[in-house]
Image 1 (cartoon, rainbow, N blue to C red):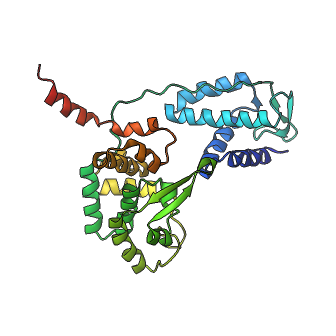
Image 2 (image 1 turned 60 degrees about the vertical axis):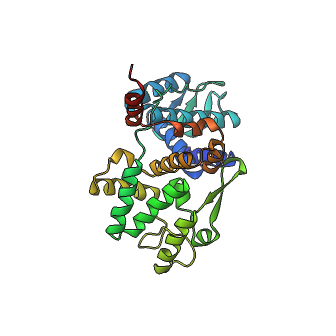
Image 3 (image 1 turned 45 degrees about the vertical axis):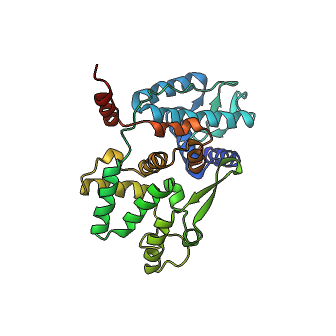
Length: 299
């Protein structure tokens, strides 16, 4: 078995566990990164890899890479390869005649690092900037990006979910999404959004099928959305650190809790398995915290 076949089998293993396509790509990338530095899967090299990651990447990226390698170790354990002295596949950096060596690692797994948690939200687009962004996009008749922003902020959709929305879903008022473990999450489209969006997309000749298409009539990529949001941030002088797809999902959650304080319902709408994940949206920005302190602390 060659290395590419092993990576392909790893992807199939992850898919059967219910991981999304983007997660599979990220985890596979983590494994490729490891084997671009080492041709031996051993505890010593795994520990060395972790130290190298700490020197080169931010904590969240380090933990993503570590998680990818740990899933790969689970896969190898499942295949019965971790107890072999030598695995029968080629390392991408070794000579064609050399097999990648497996030093018995048993149930060894890389330990993730503890990330410093902030007690405030500062990388979420403010309501003021969001409102200004919508006004400017409308004024410039840039309706395509106006609706990308509107859909993200009005539905709480992830960028991967945004790309799945079809005219049929919009007319129905919701889209059912199938997540890990076969669970269904319903993405609702508010009446105010449908009333604006349906006529616009119909005017573009989209009576059915996907909404957000390129000039070549293919679905716009997540990367293209991320890059264009940064360009729009510069054009309208909005903090680029707050202009990324997930920022609008955060804005949706914050606004929802302000209007309807039901964190359990919000967790369901966002597809969170735990309310603890949703609690982040109860945080205030550092500026909001400062305002509260200035008003309250008078002693």
